[in-house]
Length: 115
Image 1 (cartoon, rainbow, N blue to C red):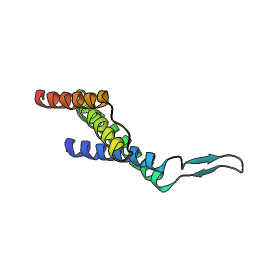
Image 2: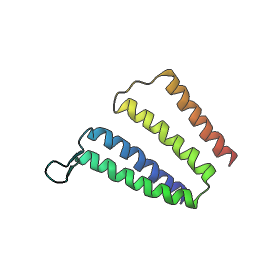
Image 3: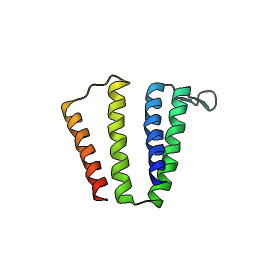
Image 4: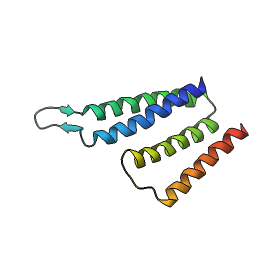
Protein backbone atom coordinates (compact mmCIF):
# COMPACT_ATOMS: atom_id res chain seq x y z
CA UNK A 1 0.00 0.00 0.00
CA UNK A 2 2.92 2.31 0.75
CA UNK A 3 4.14 2.11 -2.85
CA UNK A 4 0.70 2.66 -4.34
CA UNK A 5 0.21 5.78 -2.21
CA UNK A 6 3.69 6.98 -3.17
CA UNK A 7 2.88 6.55 -6.88
CA UNK A 8 -0.42 8.40 -6.49
CA UNK A 9 1.40 11.16 -4.59
CA UNK A 10 4.04 11.45 -7.32
CA UNK A 11 1.34 11.59 -10.01
CA UNK A 12 -0.65 14.26 -8.12
CA UNK A 13 2.40 16.39 -7.34
CA UNK A 14 3.91 16.35 -10.82
CA UNK A 15 0.49 16.69 -12.43
CA UNK A 16 -0.37 19.61 -10.18
CA UNK A 17 2.86 21.43 -10.96
CA UNK A 18 2.45 20.76 -14.68
CA UNK A 19 -1.14 21.96 -14.91
CA UNK A 20 -0.48 25.03 -12.79
CA UNK A 21 2.32 25.99 -15.18
CA UNK A 22 0.16 25.19 -18.22
CA UNK A 23 -2.57 27.40 -16.77
CA UNK A 24 -0.08 30.23 -16.60
CA UNK A 25 -1.31 33.42 -15.02
CA UNK A 26 -5.01 32.56 -15.18
CA UNK A 27 -5.72 33.12 -11.49
CA UNK A 28 -7.10 36.56 -10.68
CA UNK A 29 -8.15 37.99 -7.35
CA UNK A 30 -9.94 41.32 -7.27
CA UNK A 31 -11.30 43.43 -4.45
CA UNK A 32 -12.42 46.43 -6.53
CA UNK A 33 -16.13 45.44 -6.78
CA UNK A 34 -16.32 43.08 -3.84
CA UNK A 35 -14.40 39.85 -3.71
CA UNK A 36 -13.84 38.33 -7.14
CA UNK A 37 -11.79 35.19 -7.75
CA UNK A 38 -11.24 33.57 -11.16
CA UNK A 39 -9.12 30.59 -12.09
CA UNK A 40 -8.65 28.85 -15.45
CA UNK A 41 -9.50 25.16 -15.73
CA UNK A 42 -5.86 24.09 -16.09
CA UNK A 43 -4.83 26.06 -13.03
CA UNK A 44 -7.82 24.70 -11.12
CA UNK A 45 -6.95 21.12 -12.08
CA UNK A 46 -3.34 21.74 -11.02
CA UNK A 47 -4.48 23.25 -7.73
CA UNK A 48 -6.79 20.26 -7.09
CA UNK A 49 -4.04 17.72 -7.87
CA UNK A 50 -1.58 19.60 -5.68
CA UNK A 51 -4.12 19.71 -2.84
CA UNK A 52 -4.62 15.94 -3.17
CA UNK A 53 -0.86 15.41 -3.07
CA UNK A 54 -0.60 17.55 0.07
CA UNK A 55 -3.28 15.50 1.84
CA UNK A 56 -1.63 12.22 0.75
CA UNK A 57 1.75 13.50 1.92
CA UNK A 58 0.38 14.29 5.37
CA UNK A 59 -0.89 10.75 5.73
CA UNK A 60 2.24 9.14 4.31
CA UNK A 61 4.76 10.92 6.51
CA UNK A 62 2.78 10.02 9.63
CA UNK A 63 2.25 6.38 8.72
CA UNK A 64 5.46 5.31 6.94
CA UNK A 65 9.21 5.45 7.57
CA UNK A 66 10.13 9.10 7.18
CA UNK A 67 13.85 8.54 6.59
CA UNK A 68 13.11 6.39 3.53
CA UNK A 69 9.89 7.91 2.19
CA UNK A 70 10.94 11.56 2.01
CA UNK A 71 14.26 11.25 0.13
CA UNK A 72 13.04 8.64 -2.34
CA UNK A 73 9.70 10.23 -3.19
CA UNK A 74 10.97 13.81 -3.37
CA UNK A 75 13.94 12.66 -5.46
CA UNK A 76 11.65 10.95 -7.95
CA UNK A 77 9.45 14.05 -8.10
CA UNK A 78 12.49 16.25 -8.81
CA UNK A 79 13.66 14.06 -11.69
CA UNK A 80 10.17 13.82 -13.22
CA UNK A 81 9.68 17.60 -12.98
CA UNK A 82 13.06 18.11 -14.67
CA UNK A 83 11.93 15.85 -17.53
CA UNK A 84 8.51 17.52 -17.76
CA UNK A 85 10.19 20.91 -17.93
CA UNK A 86 12.41 19.75 -20.77
CA UNK A 87 9.93 17.76 -22.86
CA UNK A 88 6.65 19.63 -22.30
CA UNK A 89 7.80 23.20 -21.66
CA UNK A 90 10.93 23.03 -23.85
CA UNK A 91 13.15 24.23 -21.01
CA UNK A 92 16.85 23.67 -21.49
CA UNK A 93 18.74 21.03 -19.54
CA UNK A 94 22.14 22.05 -18.29
CA UNK A 95 24.98 19.64 -17.76
CA UNK A 96 24.75 20.26 -14.01
CA UNK A 97 21.02 19.51 -14.09
CA UNK A 98 21.67 16.19 -15.83
CA UNK A 99 24.47 15.31 -13.38
CA UNK A 100 22.19 16.23 -10.46
CA UNK A 101 19.39 14.01 -11.80
CA UNK A 102 21.83 11.11 -12.21
CA UNK A 103 23.05 11.60 -8.64
CA UNK A 104 19.46 11.65 -7.38
CA UNK A 105 18.70 8.41 -9.22
CA UNK A 106 21.86 6.80 -7.84
CA UNK A 107 20.91 7.92 -4.34
CA UNK A 108 17.43 6.43 -4.71
CA UNK A 109 18.92 3.14 -5.91
CA UNK A 110 21.36 3.06 -3.01
CA UNK A 111 18.62 3.76 -0.48
CA UNK A 112 16.38 1.10 -2.02
CA UNK A 113 19.19 -1.46 -1.92
CA UNK A 114 20.04 -0.55 1.67
CA UNK A 115 16.46 -1.15 2.74
